[in-house]
Image (cartoon, rainbow, N blue to C red):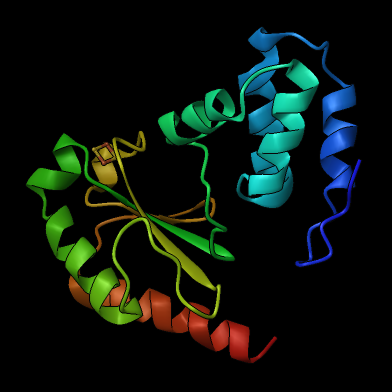
Length: 164
Ligand code: FES
């Protein structure tokens, strides 16, 4: 197993993940989920390792990694901001929250800020419709959000990082 010296990821870890699974195609998704959990995304090199391990073409691994929303080919930010766009949140103005968060961070949904701190994701119902419209940062729920509140919360996170 090689170690990619061009970045900070020690890909030997993905070998540890592979060893947990039999060399069978049906474990592809489970392996990818473990890699996603470990690195926060699916590094390109790990796809090659997985393909070799399962004797599959890399394109198969790539297809699966791009098909599932829970898997990402790009590193995500330290904080994942999820804006719910399910029906209840949509009716109560989730678009305004999306606008606020994109304005505040200067990135679009699916992107990560250059400093690696924030990613924005638009998601379906987060199971807290009574609090609509809802924003979640990591596991923390913010209900009844307005444009002003969104900006305030993000500012708090930015300040917290500065004071770390
Ligand atoms: S629709 Fe947003 S939490 Fe249910």
